[in-house]
Image (cartoon, rainbow, N blue to C red; front, side):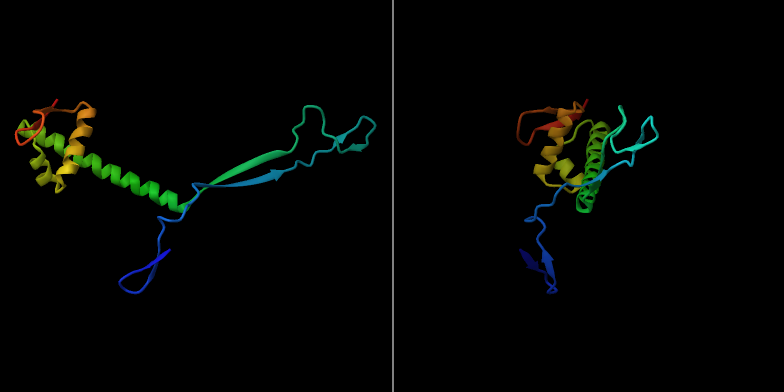
Length: 140
């Protein structure tokens, strides 16, 4: 399915297409081994202990997945910087609230809550209060 953008360009909808993660190329290499018999003749049979056909497999990464993986790394790096800002603020001020994080990072309340949950799981902050306006977090 394709979409049409504001400037009348056709944009493919990549979400509907399935993209294989890896394309596997296989190539069989047959070694040209001929054993010399004791009488000096040539034989097509491999010598005892000699390798038979060798199968080589090359794995080629799909370029779209390489780009996607790189984007995920960039996003994870930005998220880590935001988590560090929350910790730094909590250490400087002694505590941080959901509203403080929203203003500091320009994020939604739901995102701030997810960040606090992640930092809590990592053991870097602790929540004081269960829910509501009086809840805040302290750096450990």
